[in-house]
Amino acid sequence: MLLDTSPPWDDVQNYINGDWSTPSGSGQDVVNPATGEAISYVGFSSDDDINTAVKAGQEAFNEWKETSVERRIQPLFKLKQLLEDHQNDLAEILVREHGKTFAEAKGELRRGIENVEVACGIPSMMQAGHLPNAAPEIDETAVRKPLGVFTAVTPFNFPGMIPLWFLPYAVATGNAFILKPSEQDPIVAQRLFEVIDEAGFPDGIVQLVNGSVDTVNALIDHDEIQGVSFVGSTPVAKTVYERAAANGKRVQAQGGAKNHIIVTESADLDFAVKKTVSSACACGGERCLANDVIVVEEAIYDEFANRVIEEAKAQTVGYGLDSKTDIGALITSEHESRVRDMIATGIDEGAEMLLDGRDVEVTGYENGNFLAPTVFGDIDPEMTIAQEEIFGPVLGLLPVDNVDEAIEVLNRSDFGNAASLFTESGADARKVRHQADVGNLGVNAGTAAPMAFFHFGGRNDSFFGDLHAQGEDMVHFYTDKTIYIERWPSA
Ligand code: NAD
View (tube, rainbow, N blue to C red):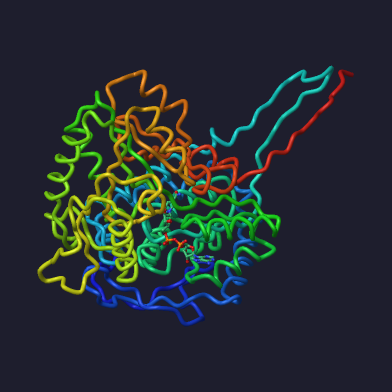
């Protein structure tokens, strides 16, 4: 099988009950963020499209749940290999519609494939427990059962990885699954489904519907949808969480973020500087794990700031398919304007401009949405740029007296997605581990991204729900436990 990597591409398709179809409603252009050119068009699915997909999912589920788990994981083994084989093509497509670099695109696909690998272990992960002689002559057994049709609604920033936080676990546990990817970069999802089509799942078990707000609401409101996974911005995560819960559904909703790095006096500064700039600016800063408030102990503040400026200046901004590029394009011109507004707000509120990335020019890509790294100094915890998600290559340095003050700054945030700490002090590391109110914490790691066999954390306004994406939490989300209490008295 060959994946078409050369745009322009035909209109984006749905994949319903094993067939390709054009979404019924009108939609929007898909634009290459580096060139400004329309490379495809995505229609939005109607209620009828959703009803057809959910019905097919429900029918397929009735057989799939009775299929042995050993058989259910065979298409996942095949999918893993197909994804490995097509990784370069998928990465190229991803760059063309998202704007990040080829290396970043390959990295995110690798992270997605890890989830397929983990879900191949469902026969072990799904076991729930057995206790002989739980009471006199009574044995008790807990079993996990799949529930039906689940959906996931995913954001633009990791279009190749985030669908795979959910899909492999949903189907391996015996459910049917419907993906609604971001309308901003839906092509890689379609290509993923071209690969999935080869993997050998029964029709209706894995489906793709494109669309926007109305499509999401039709999925959330559908009686036959058992549960909703959402990843995206906080306001939408909250709305989706409330609407799905009001409809009596299982729901996990991961939202936006505002993440901090703490750099202590004892840190290896070379390492901390490199990881700080990469954490804030890689993927154009469009990561929920981007750390962009850098809380630095006063004793090393000036030296650290100077080195960060040098490292940030050394980043090459350009087209993601150019191998020299470190930082690619932002997703849309509207989003670029929003990031520029945040920079202007930082200046208005009195932050010190140490490096201004707004005048960047990328020769040959004059219509692209580019920004170079922007570094603010002496930021204050009350400033907008210290409190709100920027989602661009912008970072702010915030001096503090000591680690206690740094933890205070971090814990004042409304969010709680992630943080990182650079230190050589075990005592400081322990203090931060115990006191930081975040779901993912990196110690001497710039971007706190857990491997697929662990859940992906998140707290406060960064997460609504109980069970997180990835790993064992997904097995709990996608199954319900029944308990058998059995008495077989001896004759
Ligand atoms: P978004 O909230 O705009 O969109 C996410 C998804 O929700 C898309 O599929 C979109 O079609 C749909 N959607 C948008 N508005 C909706 C509405 N009103 N009702 C129902 N559905 C709606 O987010 P985005 O801009 O695509 O992604 C960026 C955001 O996602 C950032 O805030 C980032 O931090 C967050 N994010 C969080 C995580 C995490 O794990 N916590 C991971 C990746 C991205």
